[in-house]
Length: 303
Image (tube, rainbow, N blue to C red; front, side, top):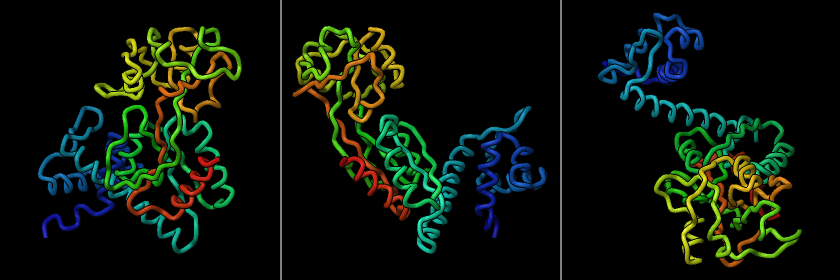
């Protein structure tokens, strides 16, 4: 039958290697093929797909739109096969193999490293691969089979619903305001809450998604005003630096408090404080090791 075995896993791995290297020659070297064998297999894939999967350039190749679509599905298939191997290893041989763990930035300050330390002590035969990224991107990577477990948050703009991902709440935490130590509202050590309305003239340092309604905007709306134009800084170290230099103030999740430098002061916003939910995410058929890590993350969050 024409094309019967064209989409076998070897062909998908070859497609992935060519896409990753941008070269038939480099893909051949990576997979220990000859270049002519690579050319023949890609030609067979293109015949099965009904058109070109790669644009042939003066130097190398790049995916066509059809190639990008097939490559996406190839990555899903290959990642799920890898997960199946890990799951079988866990079933037949106990906890071993590799666990790919995603987390957003502030979860990596203390929560996730602490849980991973406890996991590594209990299951030394499982290799841990941490991955950092925004929550939406982590969920996408989980759908595509690239992550086994993730810690995600609905800050700043919420989480999309995904029927292929199992979410379980770990903790609801308050977002604090970070002020430069010399700020009029910083007060002394152990100072009380700050009324959000007293910050109506401040510049806020954050990087909201285009068109999204942030928790800051919602909190300010409840307090009766709109925040001033923000200074767009995304990384936490950058936010801390700009606050310390007096360019504005920023919201800091309680999980990130241990990473706040000495030049800043954290204050609660009391009744106006935004709150976010931190959750674990698992694929529809999680590895046993992923379930074990979720239990340790829940224990760490409870402490």
